[in-house]
Image 1 (cartoon, rainbow, N blue to C red):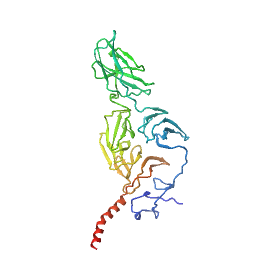
Image 2: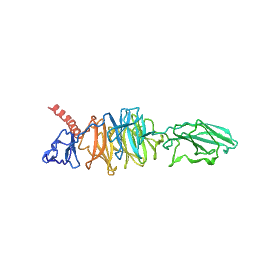
Image 3: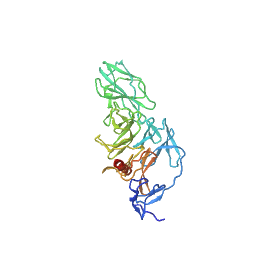
Image 4: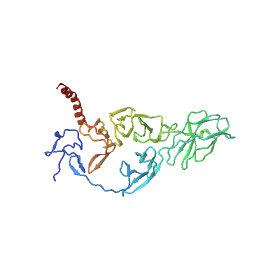
Length: 425
């Protein structure tokens, strides 16, 4: 059979008048339903390749790394990795089967479903957020060789985990010390395999400095003050008031060197940015409130794309929030990028939204109307030299059909005239 070149694909369900459908080699493209057919970028159809089941299980919420060398997924209450021979190993046990959200940064894979969260580094699972250490117990003791002058000292603790990451810190406690005294620090919080830093201020000082780092639960600090070093600051970031991943965070994204985590409520969503390059530390007073329920976020060259059940927004570097679509998206993972981030695709309740440096627009609304699906997953696939945008939809949802809506409006507008004619007759 000769190849049939199709100049335009109108879709499984299209909104154009079928009488005016363009023909291909003299034959109208009027198929109501087409299965197992691929169309390449030139419009040439081919029979879709078949599939063979290679993994027995219930894989869900898959994630593939940017280099496409690793694939993680959820199977029941297990977080697993699929290997090239299609066997899978369990990386972590989960407590919930809720939808998993992921992003990748510096070779690490961050994941959360609201109940379970962590970081996959190689085959090791790390805590995403480090807990805040409690306050120690501090008292004073006379020291004949003490070098601590009188004054009020601030004291606070901070964890360092076995990967070198530092936790946030609570507000410092204070203790007054008279001349020739030392600090007795007891009940220093410890986590097996970690160390705890004890930070002190100078007498009546406002800044805290590292006095000691220990695995012991009690220490006597006798000075001298010259031993205080390394202000509690890294890359300009202070650790006071910083906490772990917000409780209940689900939808996440990486953008401009920060992790963004969303906590979804019935009528709005709180989005928290992490500290720059410190994806495990969040200031919970720094929050972005978004109307509606956030269903997807994606870091792009044009800003942080935030898709909700009501609208699609772009948050710029100037912290502005601009709506680029007045309609929302289905659940799932409806956002993706292609061509090194030059084009952004968002599957919405009204079809495909496309964004680039030239702006945003719906590329299917005028011609194509399909039910958006109860869930939608998007991915750009490169195969045989072609790039294809794949949208996987779970059946459901109500299609937004402009063509039928126009006809319906015309019929409704005609009814009063018909009623009037009947009354006159």
